[in-house]
Image (tube, rainbow, N blue to C red; front, side, top):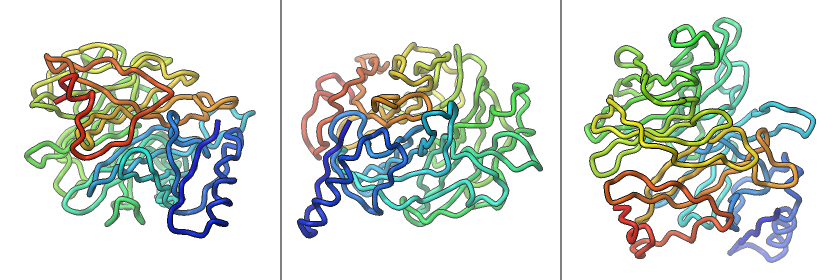
Length: 350
């Protein structure tokens, strides 16, 4: 697959050079675009010059900031090889800017590798990036760290000098990779909650400083077939907890009137994400529409479970505020424009 690029205010020769880079086959996988490269999404997947996975997204000052892990596994390597996280921004979900690499596992001195699923949130003008890494041998297993920055594109630095969550803090399972896939939800009263887990769903309150727990770690035990990738959002007074379901993974969801539950299972939200065993989601509201951001193995011929690609489609609510199942498309989403009436409104999204 190929993607098109648009550069407005630079010389025509440079524009041609960038276009040639964009036309490189996706099978290259590890080809890096120059810093602050502008490109146009041409359907799904939205990024085709490198493999991207485990999307997270933040809306800030009229832009969407998309964060993703960088899948770098060669064709003969049948597991995850992820050495850095990436950041992209867009004012309209069509024209995107890739910024310089903002964070790597090596930025955490106590970690020894693996840029697994992560999420960024903003509070009081600072941006906190909760990441999954492999802890060094002093505390084996996966761990969750926190980085902080003054800007959504960084530079980010370790906010604690130590892990926020380590495997010895959770006893819900005997595996050492249950402390993965962090997501943070900040409620209307300003209280922040950290959710995470694999095969067991955990959550805890965060202190106002966003880098310490504020109370005990709790578990959510009534999510059918919970695998990983929890994500929480709120709409019209309802809380929605979506997560990866079974393996290979679909996305399912539950609803509650309280951030601490009880959660009522509602069903499947997204089917198997073609050619990928995993399914990892983010849900955002932007310019009057709700977007479901996920990954697939959709770049061919070499996409797959360890060479994934981020995609975006709209998602809608039913009249009773349950959610419609996602329709995954190759066309992707139309440019988001402020104040434009959309199919989302017709489907009672708001």
